[in-house]
Image 1 (cartoon, helix red, strand yellow):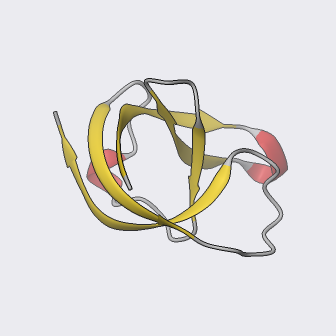
Image 2 (tube, one colour; image 1 turned 90 degrees about the vertical axis):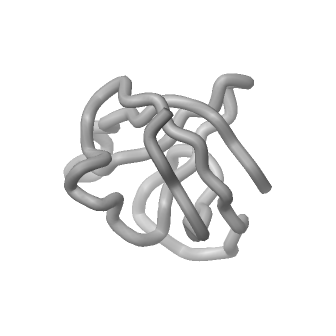
Length: 71
């Protein structure tokens, strides 16, 4: 699935970086974002794969990032 949105820091459960898509959907990467992408409000384009996981973060759909880049 292809998404376009903004990087968001979420302070729940100790904090993590997520992606809020332009359509309002929220996505939680199962792996950490690269340091160069950990910027609040940074616009990105990503290809992600929804995954079923049992994480501690209760925010958005868990996804595996296949590719991601700044726009």
